[in-house]
Image (tube, rainbow, N blue to C red; front, side, top):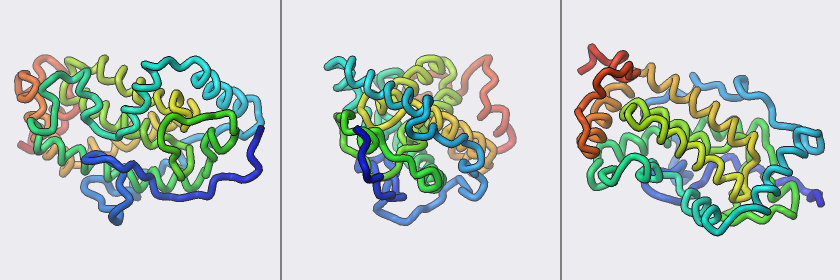
Length: 254
């Protein structure tokens, strides 16, 4: 059954976790990213129209994930509700923890905060109701976000983080991107996003990182964070025999 009322739009992406969150507690502050340089509204295709074949397929995918989700998938989706770069610790290694990475922890917090404003804007523009608002048959297993659905902020975070982590540690890039995909898909499993929200988040993350990786201020801190991460993982300070974006763009900055 379709609900008769659409979700009131709240254009603040709230994830009440620390230290990595799209926090609504303070006004937006840009650390590296000039949000005027990230025009996601004109990059993303609109989400499927409700009731259209594509819209029905999108909703059915959520219902199918709900019907088939296992206890292990439920648990995974629930812990991945936390937006934190340390959700990647299971593929990065045991040294990837906040106490070993004081600079990198702050660095990633700034990166995530920078992503907040462009995502707020594009969510407000498309104003897509969440699956559990569009259809009462959808039963979320995590906190029900009060903002719009498209694109997924969690998926955006996952790919922003994955691209940066893979550039820091290319030796683990395949596992990092697999983890980002699982983190993102867990939002469908959880009943709070459609697959097209997740795909749009992947695109948003890629666009945001493209801007970040061309910013000199970002790259100076990226070098410091990369060195700290690699040391914590017991790796050489710089990847050997790789075409790291960070290495190529920052040769003259150090």
